[in-house]
Image (cartoon, rainbow, N blue to C red; front, side, top):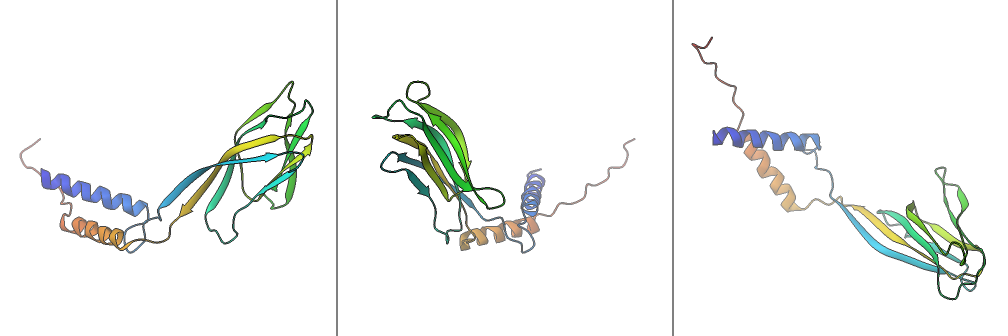
Amino acid sequence: MAAGAAAALAFLSQESRARAGGVGGLRVPAPVTMDSFFFGCELSGHTRSFTFKVEEEDESEHVLALTMLCLTEGAKDECNVVEVVARNHDHQEIAVPVANLKLSCQPMLSLDDFQLQPPVTFRLKSGSGPVRITGRHQIVTISNDVSEEEESEEGSEEEEAELCPILPAKKQRGRP
């Protein structure tokens, strides 16, 4: 019974690798790492714009997820319009106002992880601020390097699968 269970587990392991593209000389999908960092900037009468960008040579996927815009200490009771300049699906630059903050009626705005692809420029279109923009910088990296240890593990699993073949069930005579 234990040998049959081991054979079934080896088969399932091989089957799951086959679905993932890891049997017959094909590579297992590369490991993915995700990192998340706090992001923040402040727009004011002195600093009317801020550009968030990443290095062009960087092959990772970068996402800027905005969580909140709020007026900070020293803000006047005036309309503070914050505009985001980014690229649309056709890679054309567009400018969109995302917030109109006023100290007496709406001093903050939750953006609920509004996601943007860098480069992104934030502009204080009107008002004197200061307006604080917060969020997360998320980095997704796909590693194409497979270590020797992972390759040796794959080889030993394939050998185990070959050593424990699944045998057909024997027919029993005498049963109706």
